[in-house]
Every structure is written in C-alpha cells, then in structure tokens.
Image (tube, rainbow, N blue to C red; front, side):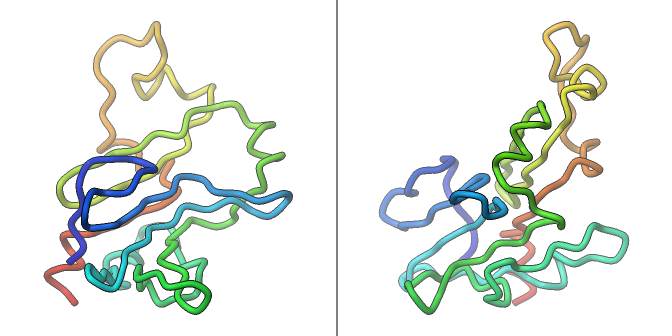
Length: 151
C-alpha cells in the first residue's frame, strides 16, 4: 500500500513510513527518498515515474522503486532527477525547496530565487502559488496512488 499520511520528515504514525527531503552526507550528492517497513510495503510504478516526456528519474538507491527498507540490503526508493548536487553546490543556488502533497502523490521541487515571483512564492507576488504549473522545477516524484493501481 503506497498511500501515506500528511507529514514531512517524520514517521507516519503506526504505518512507519518516512519521506526524506534532500538528504546529504558530507560532499555526497543529496537526494530525496521514501521508506516503508515490511508491514506496509510500497513499490512505486516505474511506468509512472518514467513517463515519456517527463524528466528521467532513476531510483538512486537502485532498488527498482521498491520503498521497503531493511538496512543494509533494502534502502528504500529514491526517484530523483539527475544530476543531483552536494550540499555545498545547493548552498550556492539560493531558492526554495517546495513540496506538493496530495492524496495521490508527492512532488518535490527546487525553484530558483529568480523565479519565485513568477511562480507565486515571492512575498510581492500577486495571486496564489499553482504547483500544477511547476513541473519544469521537479526534482522528485512519488506517484503513490497510481502505483497502487498499476502494480
């Protein structure tokens, strides 16, 4: 079951699921990842994550989009747009990491500071942010509901 409760960077109650934003260690490239336990397994649909016309998002944990986590052999799923960058390079690129969290999916975006007003995230920007127009800023995509029906 791939559906999840709304919480970011925390365990999701008794289901023991966790979504990590941009995780990094030292000078290694950072990435997003999702982790479930054996009681609530989840495998993302590779067909959904790698749709034609969308950015390539390989599973950087090399688990075939299997989010079940049991260290050291099962690392969770990590669909991320390439290239990934280490923290020092992210620090040189001011902007916003934004998350669109719906009952069907989670999308993680990086929006450069220069584009914040254009997307409605600047304090001086008129209107309301519209994440459905941000796909050009997409870093990671977790199609939970579509994975349920396809797998």
